[in-house]
Length: 460
Ligand SMILES: Cc1cc2nc3c(=O)[nH]c(=O)nc-3n(C[C@H](O)[C@H](O)[C@H](O)COP(=O)(O)OP(=O)(O)OC[C@H]3O[C@@H](n4cnc5c(N)ncnc54)[C@H](O)[C@@H]3O)c2cc1C
Image (tube, rainbow, N blue to C red):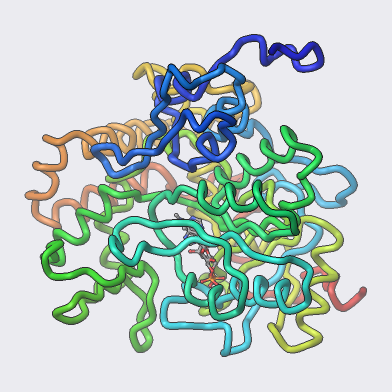
């Protein structure tokens, strides 16, 4: 079964290698591609879905290993063919925009402006795609998510919101593998890395993954953080959980909204962010450096620091500019061109964490005998300051501690005030202020001066 033109397959690695090296992020792509259905995803003790391989059914084809995004690290910003702009923090971009969206694409769960949902609606309405892979909380268990293929504006809007835990996209990808058509895929950087692997493995059906829409991902709190926040709100499973939204709108405030059979509970974003920011993380996310979803066609985040309630959109290919322009022409959204430096300014903290501390995080994790087989070129990784190494060490230890049973028991009982102070200290070490060279990149001068944006949309 070893193919001569793909000699790497002769190693016959399976997803077990990924799990053994603590690299699994529970995306479920291994299950979707397995030709003998030898893999099923089961919930682990921390809530993350982990693949289980039935050795008697495995034919060692290596597909599960090769599709896996967990085994790889982008060691330098991804450069795509034929694009003009290349940025050390953002990867390749054809244009950067703040976008505000027509009200009919927003719900109370919309985290930014609702651009992702509006873009999906536009692509479906204009028949560019036949369906969209999106995720939403499970009806029967709202602390877990599921993926599905949305085929209408209504279905897309039902999936609005950000789930701050990793969701398996197996269900949606299996559907696409079994059905002809063209689909839009919404995903985190790891999920879209896996989709790119899948496109390369199955070139004949690569066109089905027609448009990729990537979410920025600065930090993945994960399932333990969710349990912790529910514990702080004193919510228990028997109160009949209905829906949990991390960035729901309540008046002028955005925050965690927990809907139960007995009523609603709300915690403002600033309050819960300071409780979980340097304390919790899924393990694989500790060695991720892809903040702006560098492989996506469109990358979408929040423009909060530049324009409240608007989205930040990076168009990474020339045709994305046409889509933006056409959608704007028929009233789906309004966009404004900004410069890459303004994107740096808007996302400074998370970009600095993801890009500047990656070398420290990888070195520490490997010292702790984690992620040993991560495929990387160490020399290409940014080194960071000494304080960032200390911050990275503390963050990794905190996240490892809170994933153990005893760690959870203790942290859930420590006073929230103490946790907040400690989190602030670790976050300050991790991110700190910009160094002299970085000031140019992240400086205040980029705050609101939209004038220097290259107005590519309007030029076209
Ligand atoms: C874990 C996580 C970390 C993030 N970190 C940052 C950050 O540091 N900075 C920043 O600016 N933005 C971040 N974002 C993105 C931000 O929260 C919004 O999702 C983004 O701005 C799009 O907003 P919107 O109003 O257009 O979304 P909507 O129109 O509501 O669409 C959101 C889409 O995202 C999909 N989705 C939600 N959660 C997940 C998930 N876990 N996995 C896959 N798909 C999902 C939904 O299916 C939906 O289609 C993060 C998102 C997540 C899930």
